[in-house]
Length: 94
Image (tube, rainbow, N blue to C red; front, top):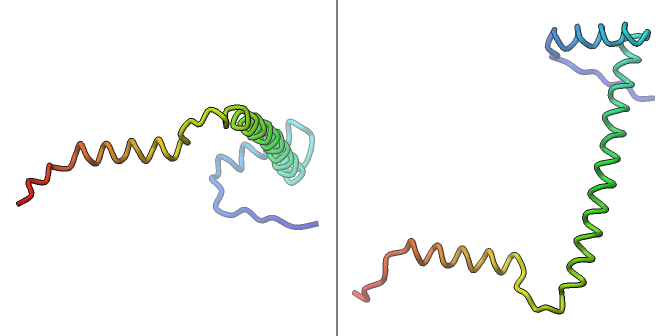
């Protein structure tokens, strides 16, 4: 097993961790492990949602590919070019 050392914690955070550990009837170290484990398990759910969203977007792109619509990058490039043109003074040919 690996060891993790966390330095420069605010005293209030340490106090709250100790209180939480006591409320759960375990050591501060066991409480810290449980907090980290719970936080990382929640991350797994976020990753699964991201993968589902990516799959839905890929399916949407597949279904709309035949429409010959400009891509988002093309639309952004056009918008930027239009802004630059609007902000640039006309060339008088002098």
